[in-house]
Image (cartoon, rainbow, N blue to C red; front, side, top):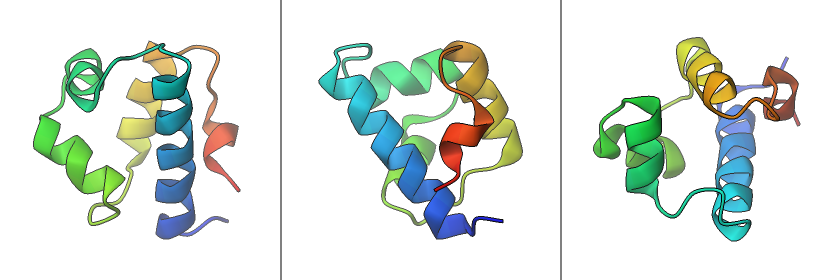
Length: 73
């Protein structure tokens, strides 16, 4: 099983891919889509806060081409 840092790292990789592909424009836009505080998203990206199962579920619901398996390294 992946540890917290690996899962956060996978999220950062996915987030950067969404930005590069222009699927989303900013952290703020993603926070709005996921209905979370922008500061929470910043903490996750900075790897100071772990990604939760609930977060992964919300994320995968918002972006159906991304699955929970994409969060494992």
